[in-house]
Each structure stands twice: as structure tokens, then as C-alpha cells.
Length: 120
Image 1 (cartoon, one colour):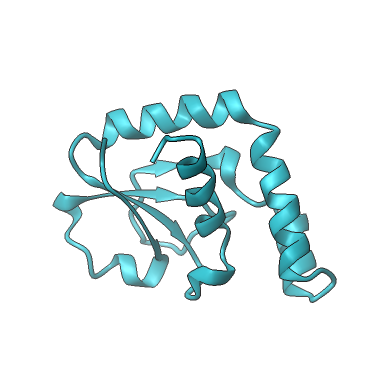
Image 2: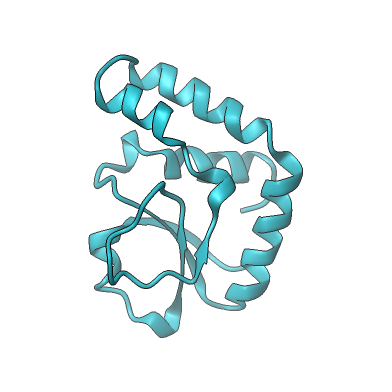
């Protein structure tokens, strides 16, 4: 199994492409940032993201709703995770998003979700 890590888009420029497999986990990406895989089923969705950004919900509610979203798509998440691992080979899988603070980012919740299921 490939090693898994998290990063935000601007920092991904610093990593050598040969060693990393970049997986987009966000609703959008900056132009020119290369990604190896776009993992759409794990995107948080604009509605949820905007509720949090606009301070209409707290992080705890965002977390609850995003985890519910992940639990609603187990087969698709497993299938795409297996595909990502196969495509990545021995490269380090990097979950990419816009958030600089991983404590308040869905990619941390996604990694926890994968770890709780013994997938990462």
C-alpha cells in the first residue's frame, strides 16, 4: 500500500512529481496545478463548503455532515480508492485541497475515514 499524506495545492508545487501521486479532493483546483486523479465522490460539495465559509455552521456541524456524506457512498469510495492505489503504484498518495490548516479541512476527515476502515 502506498503511503498517504495530505497537502494544500500551493505546497504541491514543491514536491517532485516522480515520487508523488496527487489526488484532488476539492470542489475546484487552481489552473496549472497538475493532478493525477480527481476523486469527485469525496468532494465536500459547494453547499456544505459555503455554509461553513459563511459561518452559517460550525466546524463540528461541517464534520458531521461531511462524515455522513462519506458513509453514504461506501462502495464508490472503496472502488475509487482501490483504483487510486493501483494507479499510484509505489508513489506517495497526496490528498490535495485548498485549506492550509489541515485541522479544519475535509481531507483530514477523509484520511480518518479511510484509516477507520483499515484502508490507509
